[in-house]
Each structure stands twice: as structure tokens, then as C-alpha cells.
Length: 128
Image (tube, rainbow, N blue to C red; front, side, top):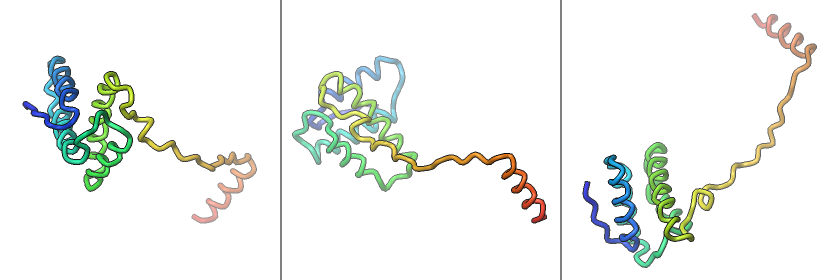
């Protein structure tokens, strides 16, 4: 796959593509996602100098209609690109910038006493 980039980060994307190809792998899905991301940036953020949290939110929203597994592939590929870009432009967004913190659970485990287990087993045997 030969990609032609025209978006605001095209020089970085060409460098990323060169690096990926130098590893000997074909990286077709990754580079196809990069081409889509480049077109998105060219259209929606033509003056972007890096990938920001705002850009990532808009990019992820653009493929919310896809199946969750496809969305996950796009996100993973995007963050591989962001990891590369972050080495060049420190203000590039990261996983931590975009992922919401895990929700706090209020679940408290309950440990049954031996007597309660016996009562449960008796009650269950009476149901049969």
C-alpha cells in the first residue's frame, strides 16, 4: 500500500509510514487507518500542529457507528500513531488524556458464615 498524505501532519505520517515499512511487516490495516486519519485531519483540522484531545474526541466520534471491535482497532492504531508523534511533539495526546478514569465501584463483598451456608443449602434442598 502506498499512501499519499495531504493533511497538516503529513511529514510526521510519512516518517511513521517509513518506520513501519522498515520493520519488514506490511502493516496494511495500520497504514490504512493512518490514511483515513490524515483525510479526517485535512478536512476537519487543516491547521493542526499535533493530535490533541479535542481532535481525538472528534476522530473517535466519526466512527461511533462501527462495531465495537472495529472501533477498538481504529483506536489502537490511532494511539500507535500518537505514541510515535509524542516523541516528536510533546503536546500530542496520550491514552491517559482520552480515556476516562475507571468508575468507582461501591460493591462490598459479603462472606457467608458457616451457619448461613448451611441455612442456604437446607433452603435449596427444600426447593427440589
